[in-house]
Image (cartoon, rainbow, N blue to C red; front, side):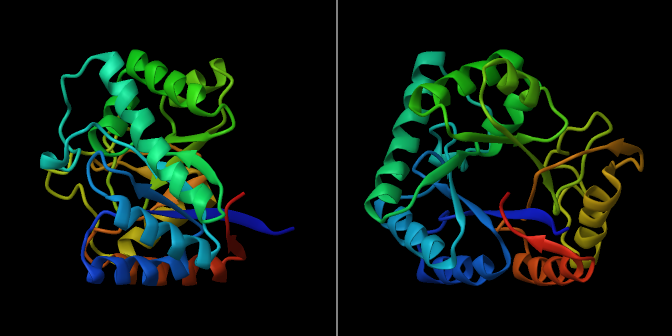
Length: 252
């Protein structure tokens, strides 16, 4: 019986042709992508360009909304009212969904970006707000969030499908959160180390924290950030090793 693992990348985060070209190269090795839709990055042009490339590559497409904070690339927590945050998520997701629909595709999931993603993994009330907002947009949309966090239980309580995500290029704290990018060693830049982490998650359902503590972890999707140094080499090596172990890279 085939075993599947979904590899995903965050895309459409740069305005240059070089950024778009890198996204297209990365798409050869993944099965899903989450596309920036104006909150932290992205524009009408980049959304249209990235969606077209993703459809050509046969990828599952997700929206990547964030706090409305392009100045900080959505990587800082933001003081914002619940109504304003809901409105921002709706605006961003609807903008991408309109492009996907126009180009003949289907929006499959929503993955919050950056600080919003991390804040949700720590704040159940925020998670509930975001999940309810997405449910009001479309109750069939899957929600991608941190595997092992309370996000799964909240999605289940609200009758929303959840995709647990783990990371190839980020270290974990001892309590299962992502180590802050400001911490030395938080971002994995060596492809061989990224492969080791993914194999541990996929084959043994566990991950080693930044302090060398083993944590149980089950995930339905693995992320490699497109802006991690060496992302293309990461994905080439990861793909090779997963396939050699009898896994099929594909969205399930």
